[in-house]
Image 1: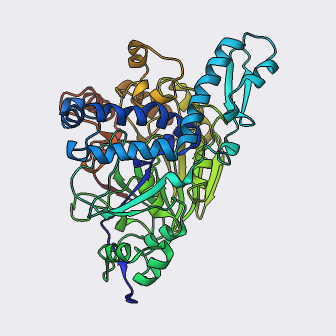
Image 2: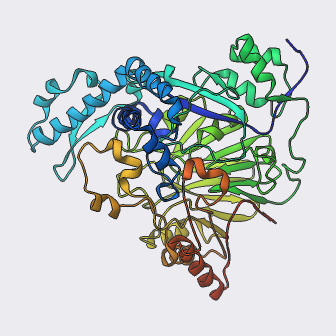
Image 3: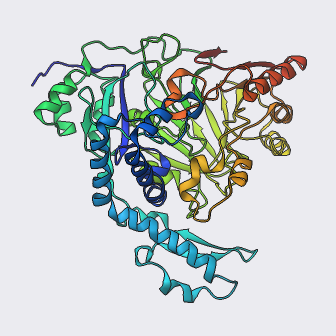
Length: 527
């Protein structure tokens, strides 16, 4: 085995998987993962096996982009059948846990009528024993709450479901993550290891520091064929960008979608990291442009395009702290981001509104996040106020302007913002697109369509900028970048309402002397 010092190629990607499906918050956190497996993923595979050509055709239809269709050729249907059989066999505890949740929710709906809840506990399914509490709110509405730290210690947490696939960035759009599982491929290195495996930190550390193939083989516990395949992902050349650090002042770089890298000579912060590895494209910042050490990673909320494991797992070992908003503790639709990331091997601190997190030469303040979650009671969402190098920067993510007075309170507390970054996906996906598997009581299509994952429209964004007193305002690209398609599956044209609203907002800013722009691919600010 070679002892030459080698680097990980800059265009290597990782796809974290659970039961073959792309991993994200609601397919990893055990309560929500059980629901998604039982009520979305298993039925999806069963539907595919009934008619593979229908699914393949639908997955290729631009009008059905982002739909729940399995995009796997019919010739591989046997492998999909084998995957389904394995899921039912190896993840049976999770499937039973999900059924128990559905039964318990029905029990609470039928049996919690305003009187003492004690008689309901013996009727709960045994899978939930010791893991839930039933409670009323002050409106006498009952609900089931999960003791989430304990669920991670229960049979519902099956770490052996986890695996990773390593390969070279293909330069073309990968299959949609919410619908199409990943099967083995000759050009992909499959590793049946958990996401917290220390070997992954060693592997991605090889982007910064060279290491021998022998050392990586030992760290990742590879077989001879796996080690030979890993060798193709290594190089003797360091690809790190020479300008990834700065020597004076402040700098913000836009890496695409909602990802910003904010830097001074003393510190670096990244927001919602979702970073391309395609170093050949030339139109974007990539992983090679990141500073070597990141003091803070700021996560705004739990949607799959904002807390992205394929990037976060590559940052392990070079991050001081991942800052996440605190959840409501035990709500079915609101899993703890802190528990989730700690179980993946990341250092985490949870924050509430107006909590402060210092870093060398500055501070981050967690600020409220309004809306964008289809009116579900989700508390694990936060915007951030960053003070660095003499500027105040508002990181707004997808927070909505449905009540602009909120932002007046933020200004009263923290002062005027110099720069505001906002989301304007003002006509988002409906409730059931992302949360269907968690809904134990059906909702009508009309109801779902009325409750969307939407950010601000032009008027709301203008109101945010006014209340914050911002002199500059920039709108995120809303999934328009080509390398986000496998996660976002968005399709815009010049007449799309989202782009029309952005144009209207930019005109509003120009009329008021506010410097503004619609971000795309890459941009840099220096002062």
